[in-house]
Length: 257
Image (cartoon, rainbow, N blue to C red):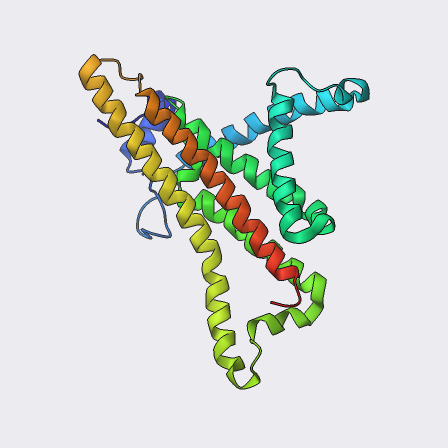
């Protein structure tokens, strides 16, 4: 039994699917001859809208100085984001220092929140996690790639190129080629890791959901333990993505590596 999103019940979308659109794996990077799907694009915009709404809720709370200084006594949207941002900043500060952490915190925090919520919405029946599509992960990874290389040049100028040549001048041409290839694969590894894990997570929930539907005839009642396992995978993948992005930026800022 295949999984469905609410898009599958929209007539116009059904017509496009009948024309051969691949809603999940319409990936021109892997299958150049296949049509490009739009499910991940639609749910990416849905996710962006959701984050804007949540952001406005937090901004409304923090814009009032008196209420912002009073901690919430329970879990709220504001306290939830405070926990995430505090954890992300502490991680960055330990790896690159306070000054650099403050400079690149908006990017890493935004990536952490986007990837986390992009993963989590796939646990909701009828929704789809856009992070299980390679295009979404690759877009985020390319941003990280461009930022950490730009950070290296801004911090060190043309001296940043020395990182690609190694400590031995005689081996510089060989090391340069190896380093360039290694750096080129960084966005690929970031995106493939995220896509593969979230695709596997979705397949696992789909399989056990079908088993639950076949046994107790309730299609949307997924086994609770596997939902918690899926949530754990979502958290870990958001953590790994933001951690590796921080590592890449940190390495580009150091003069002695």
